[in-house]
Length: 541
Ligand code: GLN
Image (cartoon, rainbow, N blue to C red; front, side):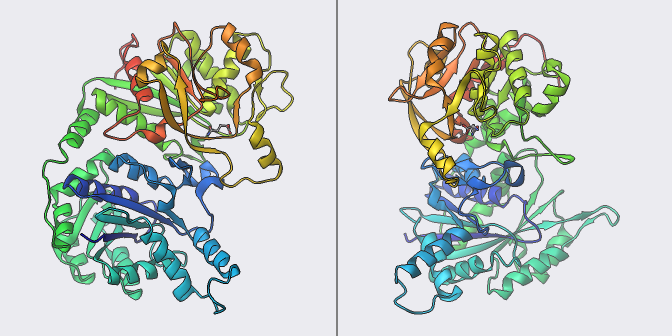
């Protein structure tokens, strides 16, 4: 069977959850026995998301092969349960860079290089390069129809759509106007019209909205956007993103897509396990209350929802396996600095995720001290591990003002220091895609908690950092009771640490949250949530 393309584009506004729509369609097709992969197109000029501020762009997702990418790739991995390499993310910057480099190498044979056909061909070439043995390639075009930025990509997918079996899906937003008490379809009509300008007629329209769509609105969209009523798919706000594949399944969306290609499901019941986990997550009687203490929670007057998205999802994945309902709260670390750690008492466990720079680090260190001294489960991720080492050095080993050189270059005890190979890169301002990135192996120490949780001697997790535990201080830290339970194969880098005689005090230089999938949670998060459930006090909703 030749490959089939499913193009997903967005109308009206961005941030609608096109990534979840794309991932959910992928999951449905997988559940019918087809091989599926997905690509995200980001029309920005950046080569990748690695140089963007977390508060600007949300989380930077790290792929197994070291790509620093838009978080939608994370959704694809979480839903599809497979690794998606970095070439599955295409940006305008990558396309232009590659075309310009080819021109410099005379690869265009002396002719003038133009948007059409050269840029368009480069985009098509990049999309086709991921086909492999997949039955379906889902291509999500970021941004909104009508933007200048995504126009070349729309032209490219229109051409691909004529060359391969393909369908087009428009994801739009229906605002609910309280004063008239109805969902409005006009922006959707405009979005469909803009798409027609580039020659794309959507096969399906997925309507995102606060509430479910009703018959009159379906009729209007059907008439004004020239689309059959059954191909308008309802996608209202739901309690969990993991409900979306089930809602689509109920509407027969997957089978309608297959029908467009003249295909039938090869298997049924492929969503049984998924459904069970959703049920565990949403309907369990037991609850667990987890605090995530981070640097990037507040943003103006609002709270960031997606800076720590993989961490939040990894907690949920563990809860869905165990059968417990999570209540997760994000806490801005500067608040702990200002108000002390009493505010942390209501949690069964604390996670400290990754971060950069000095702001809010003292609050994080206080939060870790609170966990260590009160036997409260603690999971530290990347910066979280580095902060745990600083806390231990200061408060257990008596190294006053110990710090990371990222925060204080003149600290008397630089227990965390820049990796030697990173120093040069930073001095030369080589900042893009230059951290220690992607999956690296670690050897786990037998008899430790981390070894028990993973159940093997060698594991592989993803990384994104420039700093590391300073080897000069390892002996001193160990003498005082800190156990480095996982190290790099050459034993130079400390990858995991833990404290014996503690309910759960584990940290890693890696980002295990990037390998957690809905149907295959991370062992570290599973261990953490189980430890949280052992906390004595009863928590209520
Ligand atoms: N800022 C730290 C470093 O570069 C931690 C990075 C992170 O948490 N991802 O090593």
